[in-house]
Structure formats: C-alpha cells, structure tokens
Image (cartoon, rainbow, N blue to C red; front, side):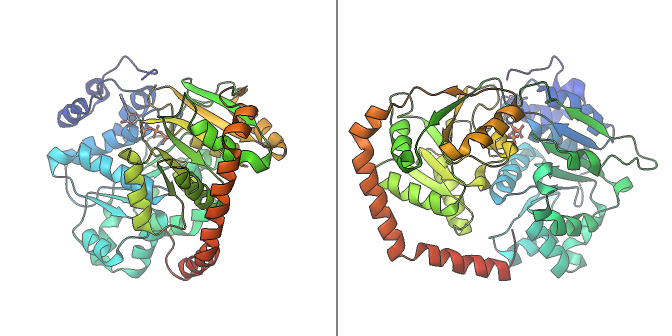
Length: 433
Ligand SMILES: Nc1ncnc2c1ncn2[C@@H]1O[C@H](COP(=O)(O)OP(=O)(O)OP(=O)(O)O)[C@@H](O)[C@H]1O
C-alpha cells in the first residue's frame, strides 16, 4: 500500500496470534490509519477514524478489538453496525478469518435472512455481532433476555460507514441498538468512514467522566484530494439517449474488454434494464440492488467476486465498503446528487494502493453535480478518450437499441415494475434491513 507506516503490528500492541494470522494473509505493515488508531483504541479511547477508501479501516478497528477480546474471550464482546447487508457479510467473513485460530464465534444479523436461526445463534452468545441496524433492532424489540441480554455487557460498538448510519434513515433503529448496549462510559465507541461529517464528529465529542478523551484521526482535510492518489477520474459527455451504447462500447473497448467493472446507476429499474440489455449483448453481467431477494443478491455478489460475471450493475447498496480487489473500473452511469456518494462508489476500485479508473457519464443536466463533486474531491476530472462518437454510432448503436427494446418488452411482460411495487409494500409492512 502507498501509505505504509514505519511501525509494525507488534509495536502497535497487537497480540502475537493476530500478527501471525495477519502475516499469513500477507498483511505485514500497518497502514497509516492502522498505525494511528490501533494503539489509541488499545488504550481504551473512543475513536473517529477518517481515511480514504481502501486504506484499511476494517483492520484498524478489528485488530485492537480482537487483541482485547483474546485476553478474555467470553460473552458478547463487540457489535459492529454497518448500513448494508453485503458489507456486514464481508466484515463478518473478515472477523471469522482473523479469529479462526482462536475459535471465534461471529454472528451475522442482517435482513433478508432467517430470523429464527439468527435468534438461536444469538442465544449461543457469539463473541462478535456484525449487523445491519434494522434487523438487530428487530431482535432487541422482539426477543427475550436469553437472546439479546448479553448485549448489555459488550465492550465495543463500531459504526462502520458511520456517516451513513447517522442519517435519518437509520435513526430509529440505531437508537434501539444503542439503547440495548452498555452506557457510553462503559463501552468504547469506534466510528469509521471515508467521509467524516459533522454528525460523526459531534456524536462522541462530549467528554465522559472516568473515560480517556476521544481520539480523532482524519486524513482528508479540505486542502487535500479526498480520493486515493492511484484513482484516475475521467468523464464522457454524452446525450442521454445514447448512454447504453456508450456503455457497451466502453466495456468492450480494447482497454477494458477483459476488465472487471462496477457500473453504478441511481435507480433499480435502470439496473434491471442495463443488466438485461448487456446480457442480450453477451456481456458477462450480473446486478445488485435492493429489490432483489436476498439470496439472489448474495449469489450475484459471489458470482462477481469469483469472476463468473465480469460486470456488476449496481445501485448504491454496493457503493460503500465492498472490497473486491479485482475491480479495475467504476462507471458512474448516473451521477449521484451527493458528492460523498461519488467518493464511495469510485472507491470500489484503486484499493490498497492498486490503480483504478472511475469514468463518469455526464449529460447536459449533470453539469452542476459534477462541479460539486470536483469541489468536494478537490480534483478536476479529465475527458476520457477511449470511446469515440463515430465508433459508437457505426458499430453498436443499432444492436444496443434493439437489445434494450427487447429487454423492456420482456420486463413489461413479466410485470417488473408491478412486482417491484408489491415487494416494496411487503417490505414496508415487514422488517427493515
Ligand atoms: N496493512 C495492510 N497491508 C496490506 N493490505 C491491507 C492492509 N490493511 C488492509 N489491507 C487490505 O486493503 C484492502 C482495503 O481495506 P478495507 O476494506 O479495510 O478498506 P476501507 O478503508 O475500509 O475502505 P472503504 O472506505 O471503501 O470501506 C483490503 O483488501 C484489506 O485486506
């Protein structure tokens, strides 16, 4: 990684067994955020960790928690909350892998999975619970002490992607989760994100009697570029009605014809249309969005991670935290209205010092959004020269338009929009994630 620090994990205070496990994963030199945060968390301080995407924030909070846990490995020790199910799954896998030699018990508590089985797992008192707020709140509100009573003795609460968890979307569920944990003075709270907001800074700032003061580590200040230095940001200016053709041309151009890429769209419907259109054009593609049943979401991500699919079409359920080192290209097919979302999406590539490209499709109405993004990241995008109008028009406009029309007809036949509405109503009546 580019931001290596001179100190090693031993000097930071990590347990020997953990250092051995990290070394076996080829993780030998701590990154800057790990060097800064691990010793302070081990000292018992609450922590705000803000560093760019792909800079190793997960180990920055996992390593000190696992070190402390191994000194007395009993009961529910830590809770990690995160906004999406797939990210929770990834973190649970990381904790399980890191603690595999120590008989660690990690419980994944997310929406879309069997609720009874989760309750049974919670009764077995896992050491770490990795959860989305909605489902953990559900267990807290509907289960007895034998299931969630152990939460009152946890030592750590982590809010990963803290800025997202502190928005109004999660407010009620987050309050329920925090209410079931020990009070502030009796637990450590760790907040991590690539985009620290004032809400994050304010949450733990009030001093607490008998507790060491909050430790804050923030890399990206206003005068710095807020994205990894190995990330190239480019744009293509295009008329709205030929976006699909440009995407097809980009994904099959010489430079990217074998690359792994994530294409971000703003809406579920757009994700479905693009997936079907590209599939009809024989691109190995899969998708991830909130209207898919959980099993399909999980399978789709597995296929992408295993390179059975080369392209992932996703909404913002995939924009944060997902660590898939093979991703070389991120396409912002639709431009997000929040510049921080651009930072997270683009950060799915160029991770851990690797190179990566983020290409944004800009139509006339996106200009002000792009200006806001460039202001936020403190960097100008450059024009992408890999796709040319004439090539798009000559080579693929007709076949892409035909594939799209057929996809739309198939979706209409299957009542895609209607099914989406029904699922939405059902999920509003049932559990949130
Ligand atoms: N010290 C290290 N040396 C080498 N690789 C590392 C080190 N620490 C973490 N990594 C690897 O770097 C990658 C990115 O780490 P991680 O997913 O924790 O990033 P992040 O900062 O949480 O990113 P995001 O903001 O996107 O969630 C992972 O593949 C991880 O295994």
